[in-house]
Image (cartoon, rainbow, N blue to C red; front, side, top):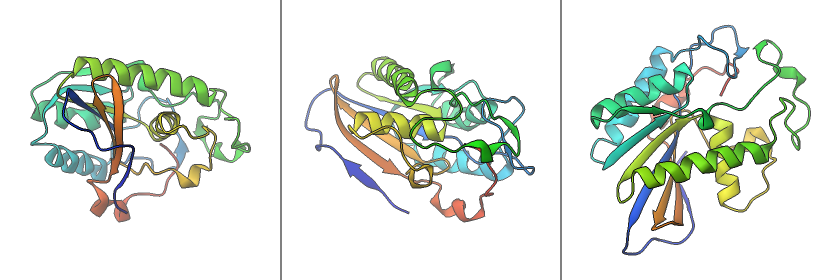
Length: 212
């Protein structure tokens, strides 16, 4: 695990960074495909991941924190917001993708990587995520924002911004638990995308149960 970068190195100017963070590990001992279901909270390891990323971002100039309405995202965002003395802005546009197969042991019904079986088109996911990113950029202009979301929405909007096809092999997503996909803007223009894993040392202990 490591760090990858795409795009040009930003120069001097009005720089704003929007960090897209995937939430930490969820307590899911039964391996439920939980999607947007209520009641799925961070595990103890997930809370540890959130604290580790909070420490990683402690010196950053974060002025705006956004989270999906789902418990796991809110709980991941909480220590970051508290550490920077800002309120969490809940934004439904960064919620997990719609999934009609939510519930116990239904994940096997996913069969087509080119068109999501759960019903929400990749382009729709990218559109709502991109709108949330731009609003966060504007809210944190000249500073940094954190958006705590979910694996597929983060990976989809990254593919959109990098000009790649949106359908993909889910096993090849570069978006581990508590990872940061950091978008640096120079003015309104995207200058670079950097990926990092501040909680990499904890990933080996993470459950392999279904969920994102």
